[in-house]
Image (cartoon, rainbow, N blue to C red; front, side, top):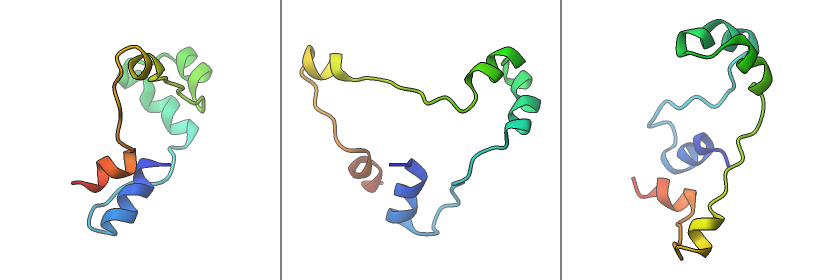
Amino acid sequence: MNIAKIIKENFGNKYSVPTGTLPKALVYIIGPFFGLSWGYTKNNIGQLLNLSNEYSKKDLELTYRSLKETIGEF
């Protein structure tokens, strides 16, 4: 679930949270100011970032709370 949606569900309009996406043209323009080359931006814009916590859950035996539960405690 989207973090912005969870914040809206828990806090309503108490916090101004952006829920849209940046236009690609804007990312191309501002990217170099953050050290991103045009080639990097072209290859990575719109790509999902897939991360895994399987190692920490399996080998380190950590347990994680849900994102909804974590954000809801603030």
